[in-house]
Length: 164
Image (cartoon, rainbow, N blue to C red; front, side):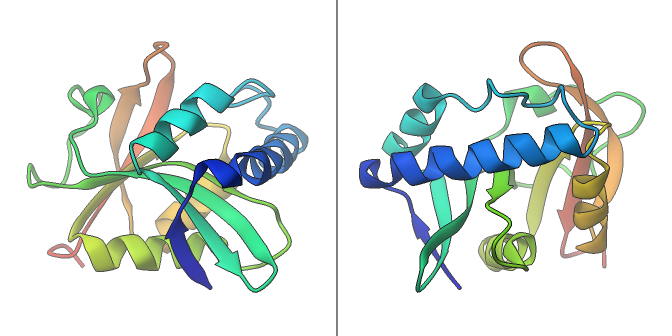
């Protein structure tokens, strides 16, 4: 599979992937993390404009999407009930989604990100047990609780190459 930056031409396909992921999360017992309202087309357009939106593609087209940031995540400044593994520069992965047609999308994303940085942070909702398992399987450690912009809590994860 190939990972590439998304363009404006990809917005319709990206929104389809997110809709599939939203439906799956709702059906899997996680109705509140995204519901059918997140991410919005405005958020996706901003990610594309800022070149932080990536697609995971095969010969049939995109099957996964994620946002990757190399700046400090504001919601990660305060962490409760724990601490980050280190204070070194890190990448942040947000908005991971798959259309469910191809297996290994998450592993592909994490392999790509690990090739770009020795420190990666992410977070997920307490009801997103599937994502928690995927994250932990890739060697990420639970570090505590952060609060996203709307104030709701998320489980914070950190992977550091120096702590294997």
